[in-house]
Image (tube, rainbow, N blue to C red):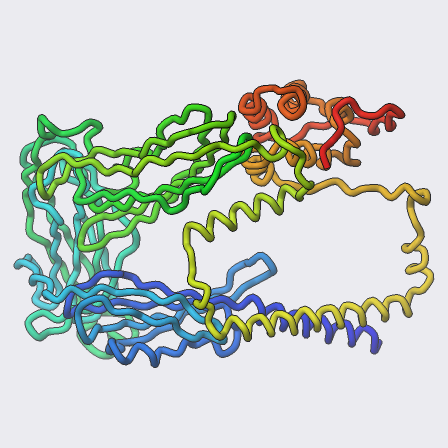
Length: 572
């Protein structure tokens, strides 16, 4: 009985260590840009079970705290159920300009610093609307004279000086345009003529489909407000309220005759390289990361980011990563796309800069955003077309490549590590030492309890000198990444290792594959490695044969090892 109690105590101790080590914290703002007199909500989320309340004291220098709240939810995680607690604090800035929100301490962790921009000019008061004096609604565009197919920010704001107990906001779709809701509703406070209002803001993306007059239907609110303290506390009862905004008319301009095609009306567009490789080698992959910052459009309005073709280099594009926001009453989007470059020959190669033609809706003029050209001297490949390189685990090589991309994309100063990182390292080391000690203790107890079973399990299952090699475990995304980025020696080594038991050489690998297309792809790989075959064509055939379903094996035992040396010796 004492043995089971000891094991249970060890389990609880390990669970406690795991929970503490896995605690995380992050912070974000509901809006990154506001006007003077408005508030913004700072959210802090943590998985710490004890002592997770953040320290908001550093905010007092630049903000007045209007109100705080917290919410906890239980959800499944990778290691069981996880409790996530969100702390929200409503902040009223004490000054205008760019205000830095420092990182906050949350149960030993620290959030990332944030920035809030506060416009010095107060927002103009809403125009008169139909409704009660304590509840009214307003709807405004960011541009009253847009172009056809221009993305217009349409913002509906509900103002209430009393607490809203329930209701709904309706905005009808106009004729001759599309209207799409963007993101979640945002709630904040604003002072108008000395009176404090709670504002519920709902954002839409309005895209006119034809030129001429466009009439926007009125936005309507119907609901209940609490006029007494009992109604506000209980959330029941209340007085009915109905508010209607003014009907607005937009004058939509046609596409100018001298506008570039495809038609792309924006307020601003900038292109930049986030990461570029220092060198290229035949058969090896290198990454170029391109970023586009757009003001006045959403992801749906933007053309695809695509590099120009390169002579002697294959270009493989990852899916576009989009960060859509709504700032200053209009949509903005940041697009990031990673391109993998795989040269097929040595020599000079040149990448012409990406160009996007667009129309400046503010200046009413054609513009062009472009990236500077890049040039490399492609060197001799390591593996398939050059001297043999030391064998490297392909999964580790892919991880190193991704880590190098991330480091080049977001460089951090060497002295930027916070002091908490040192304590975190000591904590991790202490946890690992405790786990090793406790694991040794449990193992010793099991040996004492079941000596015969331990001896039987320790007996070898195979003949002496014939240790069975375990097959590699590689999921399809990792295999696709290896085919796109790895050199041919690593690809062949991994494919042999995926067999169960692993294939001794390429001949056995071809014989054990059931799919004819996969066998042909391996033969093309062998020709590219040893016979001067087309490396680009071989990589394409490998991608088509293996990337969708992985290796397909024949049923039955593996063939016996041949006494003759292999025709194509494996590298490494």
